[in-house]
Image (cartoon, rainbow, N blue to C red; front, side):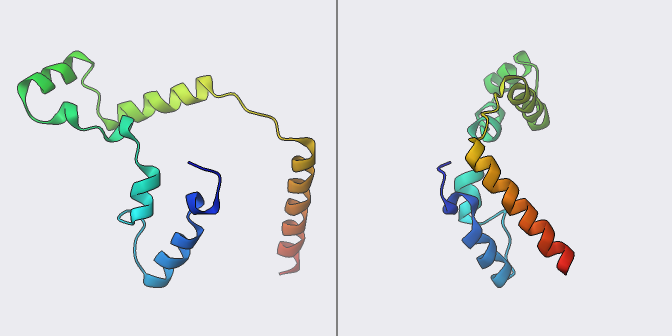
Length: 104
């Protein structure tokens, strides 16, 4: 995903709420949340060779694949420290938000 507002879907959230629609079938969801590692159904096509290959590789379902993916991310992910200036600005925003919440 690129770092712009469209990726976060703010306009989609407003539109879906206004139209009383849903996010699952929205084009934005399909575009940005599709993950070939989890959605590849080629091993589940119903033919015997695909089934044999699936069994040979551990007969993993989508939950198994997701769990492996999450464990890999948690193991390998390296947190990039925020620039001190950015961290200071974020802290100021949090304080401002907390102040607004207390006033309500």
